[in-house]
Image 1 (cartoon, helix red, strand yellow):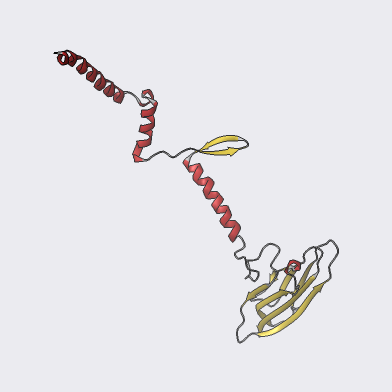
Image 2 (image 1 turned 120 degrees about the horizontal axis):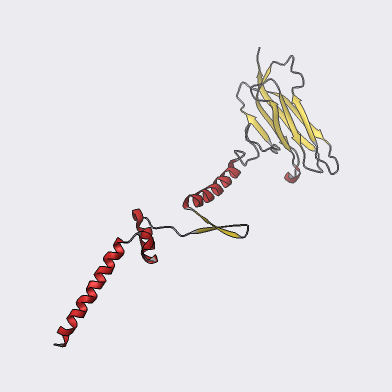
Length: 205
């Protein structure tokens, strides 16, 4: 008898539960509870929302969108990649177009074949100047009017035994495939220039 008396109360409670669930489902999204909104937001298109990433700028916090986060980390990777490959090579002996702004310690450009001959093997020497950087341009061969020699290989080696004293050299005019070449030499501060330059090529009519 006792259980029969409680039956109407249970039925009423279940009715209220079903009614509230149905009403909540029909409510606009902005009127639903926070938990339900979060769940709906997470389940849109089956994609879970990513945690917020805060970018600290000038002591404040800026929330970044997923696209901004991708750009932020992607740009850092691009900078690192460009910084590594900016000069094309980390070696001291490099081809034309691959040297740093100041040049390289030892320069080798072009190729030697069985038809090529050594045309020039010359020292380039400039004394040091206290507290200064020595810079020097020199062309090979000196005369270009009657020259019939076409360059196929250029080398310039620093003769300092201590690499910390080595200077820099780069081509600023002419070179492989031309009849002459102009080299720019630059010393370390408080040091002079000591280079050995060699040119290989062939004579043409």
